[in-house]
Length: 98
Image (tube, rainbow, N blue to C red; front, side):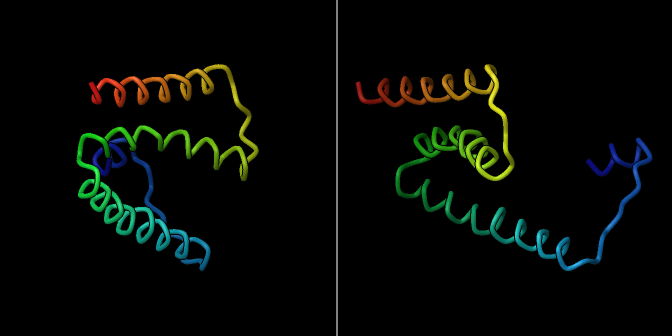
């Protein structure tokens, strides 16, 4: 991404405001360090194959959060995507039990 930004001539900027630095630290800590540790714990508890299916639920969680706090407006394509994610997870988890 650094090379793409440089190639396109995009400037780099850093806002030294408390909100910007706080959000950056929050994302670095909770969005990366703690989340990765939680995922590794999940892999250890249920196995890599089942944990991989759990990651397919992340878009559903993101859409739910956006709906509550950002007034996201659902469309047919987003509802279809959620349905396909849920059906795919259900199908794969049932298939493993056989």
